[in-house]
Length: 220
Image 1: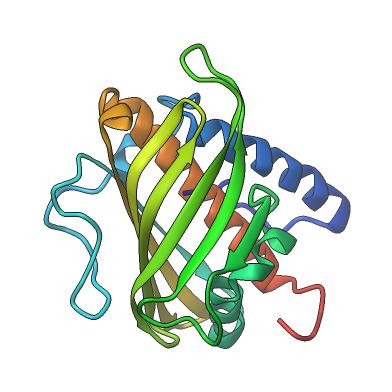
Image 2 (image 1 turned 120 degrees about the horizontal axis):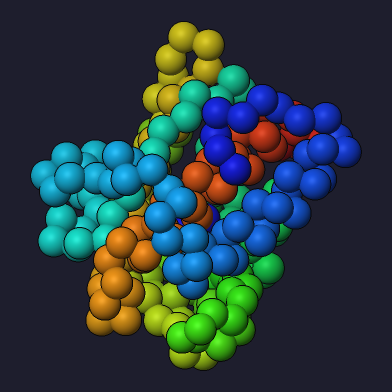
């Protein structure tokens, strides 16, 4: 649930500034402050979702968003960034903490817990969202699907279902992501929640692209 993915790669100093901006953008997005700022055309129509192992996002959800980017980096590097959950905070500033709840490589049934701050809004207090995700499907170097609730003081998403797919193309790797949200609170204002979800996914893609194309260490 997380800077536009088509932006040019910044130098180190502008990148730090943009990263801080992305962190604020995501936190605001999660609470629905960015209503109307995400292109409505990005919203996914029912019945057009992708799949991982035959499974996709919630087909009945009314809050949904999808986006794509081509990343000029090796597939192995992109896959590692996405699946090394405990390192998410090192390249995604909006992720405050991330921990695995089991050991070994991610696989169906693996669980992880992560947190992200959310500022106050007219209807919700400043809080920290606590998210426990369970991997539902995984195909190495191809796709991953996870789901789980996001809960904070005065703010709750009953279930987010998040799909990522990766495909080698000329010049890089085509990364596709889509997510759905369900829950009475977020469904009370679908346009606002959809805008929030979209802003979050665009920021995640931006950070993934920037980090994969400009790694800071040779181990990624």
